Length: 358
Image (cartoon, rainbow, N blue to C red; front, side, top):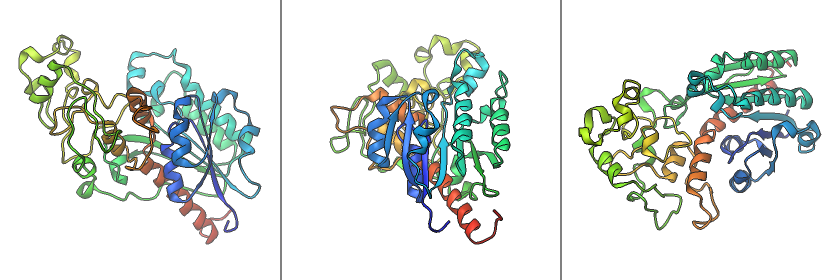
């Protein structure tokens, strides 16, 4: 092992959250693939690796294998688009979205390229997808390829990620048993919203920081400004708002279940899960704890554990707010990527020390 490079290729790489974390752990990122061309700048700039704009269904084994060197320990990672497995999709039975089949493409490329190590991250509901047992089939394919497999639903605050995000993490190795490292945090020292973004410059709705163009907040309408001003940390429109500010749809029985929308985050807790719409207050509890606005792009990035130096756009002129918000929400938190990377490194060191038989 000692004379081999540990090299990873990232399927569904997006703007590089998973790759950046693996890189920080000490793994070389060779290449990323994504169907969204707008991710190219951020991935290549931050991960120092090649971005290939291509549909995964069109990727052949040779497209991947040429990026590995002969003596590399090959790692193949990916987070297939999670929307098909979301609670919303399952409840609405919107199975016409065929992106869930992308997991089969991941399995195909594993069979064709035969990496020593595989990792996958996705939403927990992947385990409950009833239309077709896609996760079970994925596991069966790995077993057929003689991988040792570990998977678990991970609570992100347990690993220093300041959001209440639950994710399904899978690790598989041809060389021996593998698992995620032990949690690094407990309830006593979870990273809170205040820990993460409490020191950022104050800005108003619709404003950008003069020193950081990524620290930019969406503009609220006059009515939404009234709503956020009446909202309390961790509260709900049900209790906090005057009747005239409540939306008609939320007065219906079904709407009453969405008590967190238009809400403020709490300083002293981890944030809610970041989504593609996390910079708008009408899409969840994405209001700033104190300032009368939704969280900014920079704050969303930090809550996803992207560092301050992460480059999402080359300039303020080239920044597309909605696009970057979507990219941040879709990303694997880099800190989780680092945890996965450290778990792989630990696994390989144990193999070197003879603690696991090859």
